Length: 151
Image (cartoon, rainbow, N blue to C red; front, side, top):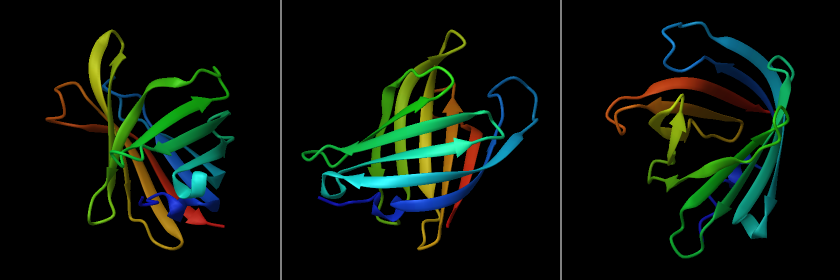
């Protein structure tokens, strides 16, 4: 079993930016925050809590690796509504260390494809992005970016 999220264990400072997807407004809001990540199941799972005071909420991510397929499922919940976002995004890391995770969801009454991407992973830095697609993944609009620096 490959423990692709081992890099994330520990305490991080984060700067995050988000925008409303597909509303025609290119206004981004940002928040600095912190994240603490813990490894579980000998690296086959992990959980983190991110505190984003500028956005007015905290969030929890739970990542679990399927021991057969080696795919990761990533679940999200935030303190604003306390609801687990379903379905999870599911995927894996490629040979270059970039992780891509996808789900099919509904937004504003329309079907969308969701992508999480982890990249730029190094000892003290990492980057995460969320993007949406209304055309099945032909084109993507990034609506959330997070840069992490180890504390």
